[in-house]
Amino acid sequence: MEPAQAIQQLDLVVARVTCAAGHAGARGQSAVLTLDLGSRGTAETPLPVALDAAEALVGGQVVCAIGSEDVVVLTVHSHSMGVVVVQPAQEVEDGSPVA
Image 1 (cartoon, rainbow, N blue to C red):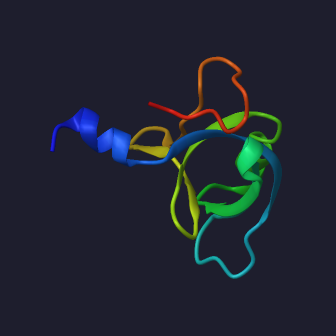
Image 2 (cartoon, rainbow, N blue to C red; image 1 turned 45 degrees about the vertical axis):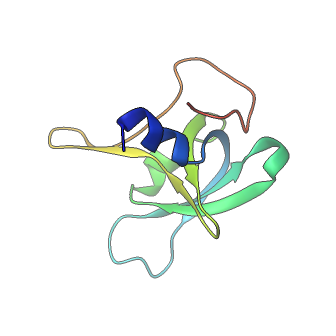
């Protein structure tokens, strides 16, 4: 499968982070984000970052993949920066598809 075809198979959208909370019981640094997916409603998902880093995302937008039962925020795992959240360069409507 070509890379462009593989990307089209994923359900990628832009979501707005509306809340960040500590992730009780997590083994490492982790927070739970509440996301506004536009017309798709809301979702909660864990993110492997410290709570203060997650709280800095509140009000901003992130790129996420929607599965049949869960939502995953896309991140880059950098050797020098740690976990970096993928975000659009400009504000768009919540729930906008990523292609």
